[in-house]
Image (cartoon, rainbow over all chains, first blue to last red; front, side):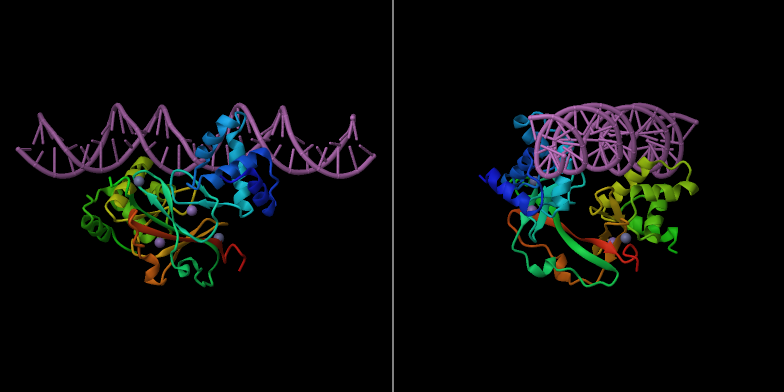
Length: 138
Length: 138
DNA sequence: TTCTATCTTTGTATTCATTACATTTTAATT
DNA sequence: AATTAAAATGTAATGAATACAAAGATAGAA
Ligand SMILES: [Mn+2]
Ligand SMILES: [Mn+2]
Ligand SMILES: [Zn+2]
Ligand SMILES: [Zn+2]
């Protein structure tokens, strides 16, 4: 279980003022590496922060992404998903249950940007899809 | 300019009955390889098909994707985008203008599925993002 | 401490892509 | 023509994301 102190440190490293709400969201992301949606984060924090507003969760994640502390994934057509792990790795989404899983240990060449004169690339997202074992009943 | 005949043929190859509306959508996709949104397709066809319903465009693309005639891209967080080219290629989205461009000629290894016991992978999507030359003013 | 300016949070209202569903139209078959 | 199934249409509902204004918290100056 990572502590609020580590969240504070990480937030300050990214020049984000660690308010109570921001710290709670960061704690959640550090302890729940499930690529949660805004709604999942909001619902999880609500019981302990009854006055939390969903707008705050949106604002908070916007600033996290802006400062490079968190990555926003575009893999689920329904909702944005957020990943505290900003290192190079790929994802798998199960078309049945919708869960998003990490795929590590792929060749680093996969994450290199092609040299193209027409575009300035500054990010890559590699997304696999299919069905997970749990949904396939095994 | 590809003809309606080619659309008919392509639709039949995918066991899709070529109605007037389906043929019009397929024609549009074949002649406009810009990864259009539902709304772009609908608005483009409306002038010549005043009774066209947006629901029909949704239904039509759902069946196209289901039958493997068209690929749905999850790259733009605002809208689904549709690609008549189902061959292995990557995409670039400009964070400024939102246009989606093809990236061909990448190593074929990039599109291979990793062998993982936990998931049955049946698709991969490689998405780059950044800023296009036009938006960078050059 | 008090005042002030700024930052942050909150609640509400709105937008808009997508889905649900019932009705109408079209096409194919007898 | 009558029957049936497939396809298209229109309307309503859903729900994620955004806009915005008001309230609250924070930190520094006086
Ligand atoms: Mn991840
Ligand atoms: Mn393409
Ligand atoms: Zn699953
Ligand atoms: Zn651009």
